[in-house]
Length: 268
Ligand SMILES: NC(=O)c1ccc[n+]([C@@H]2O[C@H](COP(=O)([O-])OP(=O)(O)OC[C@H]3O[C@@H](n4cnc5c(N)ncnc54)[C@H](OP(=O)(O)O)[C@@H]3O)[C@@H](O)[C@H]2O)c1
Image 1 (tube, helix red, strand yellow):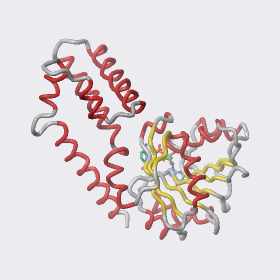
Image 2 (cartoon, protein in one colour):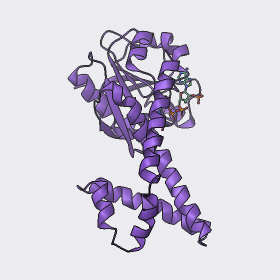
Image 3 (spheres, rainbow, N blue to C red):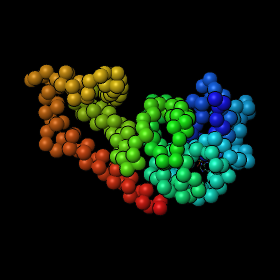
Image 4 (cartoon, helix red, strand yellow):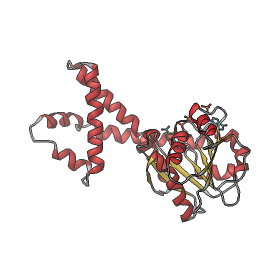
């Protein structure tokens, strides 16, 4: 199959990570980038003839929207020039629902994606939700185009996207907070900031890699490193106490999901 023609709207952190992955791949897609202030990297791609920057819009196979959600309503009408009867629209904007995309763009062929920040280095996870009009072949194309950001999961029912946002979308910040709190605690106990921050980050990286590579659930991995009466047990007794991490996380993810529902209502 010939590589699809792609219009990428917004080449910021996520958009540029996508385009950079497509350019590194074997198939040489026809990439048109729309961005009012293209970065140096994007300009270099254009100078090397790898992408077209800000060309006149015309219908493409896939239109990828990677601008901030607040920018979208103002520009939606102009994006219609990229859309033909066979164009698939893929939006990575947080909180903008399939129905809102379909109404503003005048097409039902829409995929909504929730990526996360590690996508900028190809280590993210993107969760897909789609309208009923998207065909299996188009879903396959979208999954392939999203792979530069990392793992691609779904499609999931759109009603679950707010919870997905609270888990994987906002999740990297919870992990950064954990690293921060672990390091601060060690500093308070007398370790240097440099060593504490290094150990916290490497511990999280190692534990996360172990978890992803293991076929065991996180609870089994936790139990395997917790000897009764040992040091880990002493710490977990605090973290898992009433009002501890499990209940806090329950409240945090619910708050994030509720905020996502509010935000997507605001943009109606
Ligand atoms: N970063 C994440 O971890 C993450 C996670 C989940 C979802 N998302 C979603 O991904 C989308 C992109 O996020 P990002 O972090 O890549 O944002 P970003 O770095 O701000 O990128 C957005 C890009 O769009 C450009 N832009 C602004 N107005 C435009 C227009 N009218 N036409 C074309 N391009 C325009 C911006 O240019 P200027 O900078 O000059 O304004 C910028 O280059 C957002 O909708 C966000 O909700 C991001």
